[in-house]
Image (cartoon, rainbow, N blue to C red; front, side):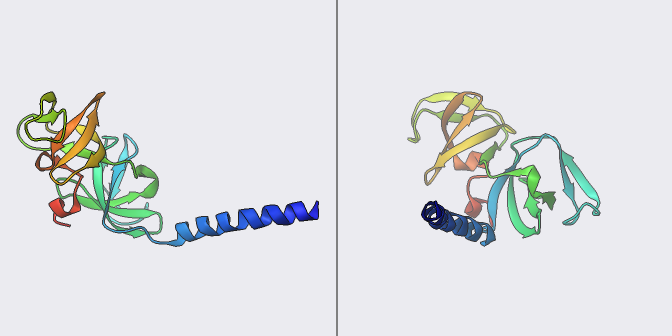
Length: 162
């Protein structure tokens, strides 16, 4: 029985050590995230004592995390608004926001001349699946397709100027 416990300890210890190291390593900044709730308070500073600047009611809205302090993340929205959000209100699930003054075509493939399978209106939040140099594969309400990066916000840090 003692040999069994020792063997189990030897198997579990590396897993625990790896998990502890992963949690202690700081995450890369800046990085994209999305709002994980339909009610998120954007605060002036990293704490509950700071004034609420805005209340966001758009689950899935993409943000850029630019700094972190304890359980607080400094975020920037597509319109440039900056503030602090509790980490529990953020998700690592990647989304993008359709931008521009008119509907954006979702194409069947990444080729620029591919057939249009759907149109996404400005302001629509899409699930980001993957990106290539100039286009990203997204999904919106059961429709998926490729959209030009110039028509979305939340896919490329270089595009955002970060």
